[in-house]
Length: 279
Image (tube, rainbow, N blue to C red; front, side, top):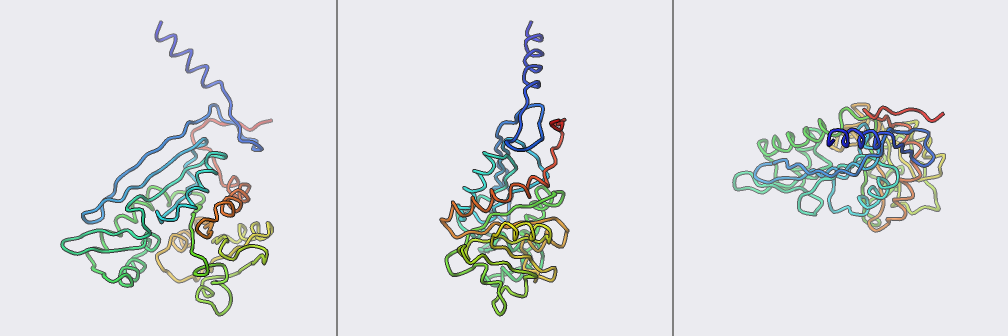
């Protein structure tokens, strides 16, 4: 009797269909939200990698937040996931921008968006005061865990970042400005706040965003290797989008993210869901 009940329940659940608003893809069943956190050690300290999968839990697109204090970005990403689904990766440490850890009797700091190359790790740790090869090796192992599990086999990376007013903006990429050598093309909508913009490594994505009249930078293929995820993704030929907004500009960051729905969905491939196209 119990076996019959379980079999019947499975048949009932698997017969339910789910479709994303205007999408023409249907899956055999809706997927619930799932949350997970894994701890990775750097020296004597642990960093949590929190993952959330919502609705269509396709793993070939990664939404990622590397700086834990950039909370506006994570709020925007969570709203997108609740509406359209996706897979989100977030670093959890002390609630601050930098990851700090102890090795022996010394404390080290590193920017988690400067750890995706050996030269990036060395330059960043040196800039932040203290570099030691043994500490850098620990950071490199941590970075490789992120890349192996959440980046290397993906079709698209969507990063969320926040900035402080007048300290970093799309104007930083204009001719004569510090980031200009790292930009191949720049489009500025004068009606937008320059602190709110998108950076991408993909020419076709850049053109589509420009057509939407959104502030956008196309990263140069010769961009300096600063250890950032954008440079790593570009060199590995993984399309990358960073949606950047001023701290507190939640509505603006959401508008930019939701405006890219057609681009993001273009990279979505449902995995192991036995989906069929809606005729």
